[in-house]
Image (cartoon, rainbow, N blue to C red; front, side, top):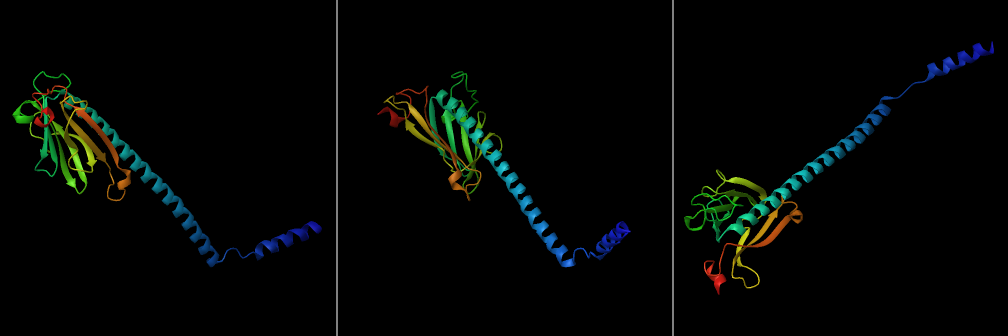
Length: 212
């Protein structure tokens, strides 16, 4: 008899529960939407940050490889000059004679004074964005030359100079700044600099300003 009364009491209590009201349900759903949105936003931000880091690392690696290639070309050259081009950038002309240096394959009429050589050039894409190219077979441009680095932040990355220690050898000073998002994050520019002498230059045949 006691067991039957207990069961009836429990049954009445169960049937008497009203559950959640509509307002309570809406509040719970709103909280869930806010929490899930915050989690999704966190994942999106993390994904964008990872993509940005990978892109910046790719740009920096391309800049290092381009500087290594530039160093070989300049070391092999016997003359160099730089000037503006019709593509909003600058062109570096390097004279490298046939069979003068096995590290550089020189094409016809690409260098200084229409001699065999190598050309490097920057081509303007947008404000503070230039692309670096290299060629050994024709005038350097964005159509036929070989792509090297994107997102360079200045047009002219080369300056003519003289070698150190009174060697009178011509040298090229390189300043290669790379930044994929220069407009909003100028402080994140990755910059490579170097001063490279032309090893096949001589005090007599090199630039006049280096002979004095």
